[in-house]
Amino acid sequence: MEITKRLTRVAPSATLAAGEKARRLREQGVDVVDLGPGQPDFPTPPDVCRAGQEAIDAGHTRYTPGAGVPELRAAVAKYYTDLYGIEYSPAETMIACGGKHALYSIFSALIEPGDEVIIPTPYWVSYPDQVRLVDGQPVYVDAAEEDGWIITPEAVEAACTDRTRAIILNSPSNPTGATMPQGVLEDFARLAIERDIAIVYDECYDRFVYEGQRHASPLDLGKDAKPVTIVVGSASKTYSMTGWRLGWTVGPRAVTDAMSRLNSHLTSNACSVSQQAALAALSGDQASVAEMLEAFAERREMVIQRLSQMPGVTCSRPMGAFYAFPNISELLSDQFPTSGDLATHLIDEAHVVTVPGTAFGRDGYLRLSFATSMDRLAEAMDRMDKAFGELV
Image (cartoon, rainbow, N blue to C red):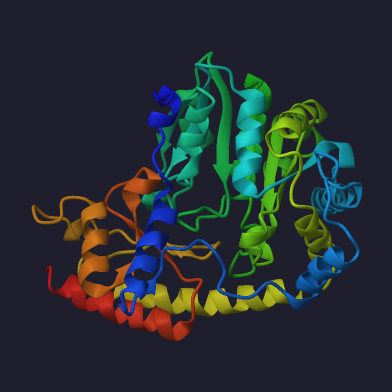
């Protein structure tokens, strides 16, 4: 059977592929330090697990409304109303099967064939392929490491055409850990209003910001930003619920209704049990989030310090999420011409899994997750230091 052209253009997720290689090595008895996964190493909080178990016992195991159970939609709407002081109703929210599903639903609702979506680089691996899946055209705008990986509205505006339909913004960033300042995001909101384009704002790491920062959003501009902003949130990172597959969108009613119609045919609904667990997560004790943030902050300091001491390596300071994105361009050579080649060398020789920068649209870098224990991080740093030292 002949596969559609749009799927032949789509590559497998590089982050999932890295995890699969680590699993295969472990099955062979290899001691692998896996810095590839984008998930917290903490368990799902006990109260959230109990809510899931109680949901099963109570019989919450059947279809729900396509856009999500009313109680969870109301909790999501209240969260953003309280956060930004802009009134959101449950009808302006949709519960999705994780952040990826939320993003794909947005692109399906907004993008016609040939429409352009501006994607700053480095980008999260799934953005370009999801745009291509709806026959849209990714348009890349490079952020600069020396600018803290913060893309400017001026650079994006220069890339806009009459086919531009949306801009994807991600803060805190996967893979760089960069956090966008409030003033810059407000300027993006003004640009979107002026040009009548959508901001797809992926803030799945919004609770993981360091050094006393406040997480910012285009919605900080006020109610004028509401018609052009679609927020993507997720329980996966904040509450260590990656396997529960639960995310959401918050945005204009017309977009929400369109996505809900799509998902009535695509998934029927997000997992009924996961929805009850996410309701408990949003409305319950937030101590587990603070505990994770404290641990990630400690690990961040160690990883950045160790990377900065490695030969041929520099690394900007991540201000959010739980990733480092070190520059390893000085280590590239005829033997290892790309970051993908170097990442493979690290797996094969040092048994450390990273994700190459090529997966994020920027060669010469590696993405490291520090969402693993301090002792395993230290072991990974030792192995990388030794491997890089042999290349210099």
